[in-house]
Image 1 (spheres, one colour):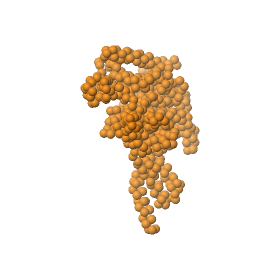
Image 2 (cartoon, one colour):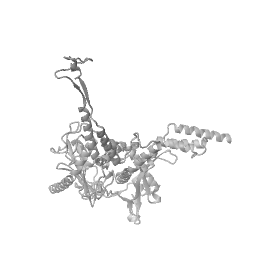
Image 3 (spheres, helix red, strand yellow):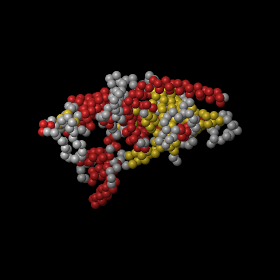
Image 4 (cartoon, helix red, strand yellow):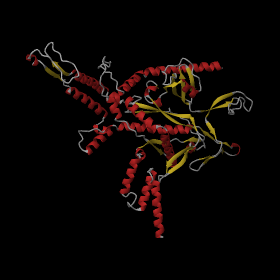
Length: 585
């Protein structure tokens, strides 16, 4: 029986390896293009001929347009979540999701992730985020945490011919890991002979881990292998699995060798239902009872586990192009100009270096080549003095410089970037208002890129919420602010999203609308919010400026925005108001 099972697993692995090789081969041209883009961004000195072949001589000087224009567009803004409930009774739940997602943005290293993602998106035309559940992150009150990591497009091997990830039947991820890391993750010792990746900085042997995600009737499956060694193959990789007795069906207790019924046979089963062990108190005050039904039908309440029916990846595109998995690459758009600039810069440098001053002397005469300031030339007669001359040879590079600058302007125009947008001196915009208009025009041309970023983050927030419903069994603490701006501490629980249908069956309501809050970036900029609050105070938005009530409202808001010493100032104003009221009495 075991040999038959092993044979079936080997056959499955062989089938998936064949799919992987076909997909990798079909993706090969795109992967080569990715290498070329990365090299251009890093200042590659190779010069290409019109037919695409590399010239025998490299450029000696590179003005890196790809690096400059990509870096000009980098934004450190991290979109903030906006969740909308489609039913009025779910408004509180929508706010709970928003607060939990904001907490996750603070906990996870999104500043670093965003910085890496920005460059990858502009260089390669897109980037990929993978959402996982890290069960190794444990505390006294919870097990597991959300984990988000970036996947370089080269590591992502899509199903050939399909340009939408969620419509694919399967795709693969390539990851270089050390043997020890793979063994810690899967609990399997890696066999010898699978070292197909270079050694890391510590000299540890690296292996290439192939992970495939696929759709099947059970849900989203996952298969992983190294070389010819299968590590896992799960039809539904997020499903709950439990060892049960083959005879009575009771769960196995702490890896015991013998069941209570006396059987020694156990098998792994997929758990689709959760049986409550106590009453569940929810945020709205309602209770999910431990028992449901009456009389003979009275039994413990069963709740279905949430089932994730989408791939755990989000693709952010640079500029959408029909029929492509990723969008347009900015490096591709300016590649011709970058190649011309390398040619021209090399030609200009060569001209200047070959130019110089030439000394004309009578035949047979030499200058003493010493470090002395005065050089001595011995002449045979005064007629030889007239034969001594200096000729300066200075090549004309003005046209070359003009063409180089023109290519630079073409590259900027292609991407829609102006001097004002880069913070440079803009000769076409003489007034401050003109410079502002020029920068705004550039921002308008780049608006589609920002929209694609917001769309990707909206999809990411939805996936994060669904992963929490699927895997976060325990209530999670959430920090937010109330209407007065004071800190507020609550909990996020997946049970708050349970509802009953007409038949009394429980189900998870995940029907919320996810997008990004355009005002959220301003709210996260404390200095800008402080300045905005001061302006509102001066304009009388809090009442008559200078009055105690207006000052109290102003400093309450500033305290909510974490202004230094705002709480002490607010307390002093409250004391003054109380003292003033006592005098009036």
